[in-house]
Image (tube, rainbow, N blue to C red):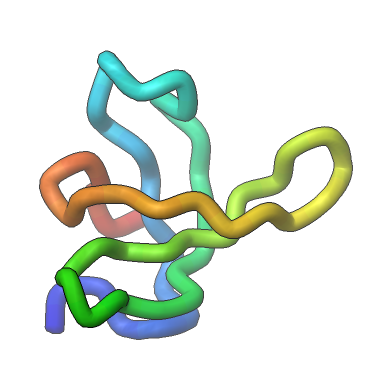
Length: 57
C-alpha cells in the first residue's frame, strides 16, 4: 500500500483546489481512493483524492 493510514501527503494535482496543501491519510476506500484529513477553516476535514493526485511527504 502506497499511502498507509497516518502517513503525511501533499496534493500535487494543480487542477485541484487543494493544490500544495498537506494532509494526513485517514483511510483507503474500497474503490481505491485516499481519504486525507486536511486543515480547512481551522478544522481537520476529510477529503477524498485519487492516489495519482498525491505524493508522500
